[in-house]
Length: 197
Image (cartoon, rainbow, N blue to C red; front, top):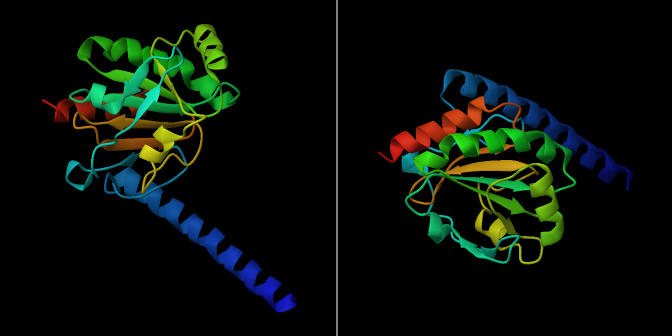
């Protein structure tokens, strides 16, 4: 029993150290512009080169008003998908950033879609009214269909998580954690728009 505890502690320490190494590598790769295939929860984006992108995301869900939403309805557009829920403090903090970018890019055909992972529709609508959210949210608490569609190598590992989807419906970038400012997401949206031209 004691030996098993020592082995478990050793494995945990190794994983912890490996995580530090991974984060250090992330910082170097991101700073140099070289890292495009890593996953990290530090807030730095995961960027997927067009040639490395998996197949298009596919799901159908209902939004907070009961209207059907699906990725098929967004094909041909750059889409920003934000996983959130009302009790999430970082989600509340980043709402103005998402709203400002939604307003900035609405005339350029960029779509925004929230994915509420916890709340029922009434709670989601209350949040959206309070924070003046102008785009719909898929209500994913009961079916989990949107989370399933995003499962894989760059799945949403925390809430909030924000994705930029290219015009072919494929994941182009992911940011895990609170958006601290508009700048990184703004750049990712601009890059995705430029690709589509």
